Image (tube, rainbow, N blue to C red; front, side, top):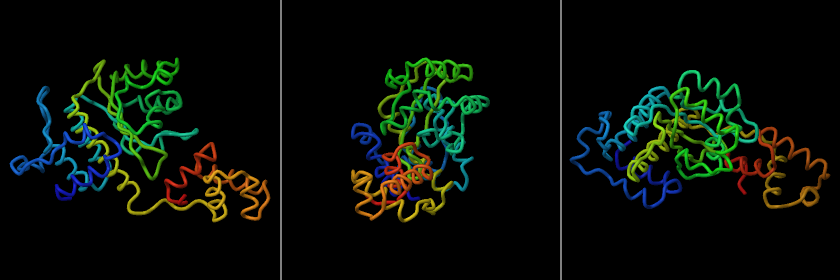
Length: 288
């Protein structure tokens, strides 16, 4: 991908993810800064990353043919900000399991297995908040209602056994999941970045998410799991119609409406009709 195209794509993807304050910090590198655009960077501690390094990463994202080298590259780039581990995944919702949703797995050996076996995604404040916001956040900024529960504190304490003490999460919209997130982990008790560094990391994390989804789901939309009638019922439910009103519109019984909605929820792996409508729209099964 040409550098100008990468910049344009970055701005399109990040317009709803980072604010104007962070976005303007990422200026297009000038010609003299582009000389080593194909080289990976490995800055020493205390030496700031330059924007040309970020745009070089964006170009490399388009060249990978499998997730493994993309993970290695993103880990190396994140290391320049003090992060040693990362995970890129869909955010589990309504009882979904984490493991099948993971697209880049760079957590410490043993921690991912424990996290999944004990179903920590259901109680981890960082994971829960990742499904409730589209704004990047430090782990220590997760609201107390999620972070201060006994179960969430247990997850955070156990993570320290694997060298994970703080982190930074970059949620982003995904057509294949309710929402996705790339979460960067640090061994330091309190990781900190400048506004410019946050903009750089958000850019790379979001672009890596787009790149890995293109690899995992290459150029093909997800299969439409819903029947025509299920889509019709969801559309009217999304318009705020009751069971009785939907039945009258479609000429079917209330119980039949309920059956179609139940089938749609099960197929979309969600708990509520509202979630089913949103998930169906996100997957382009319906167009409200």
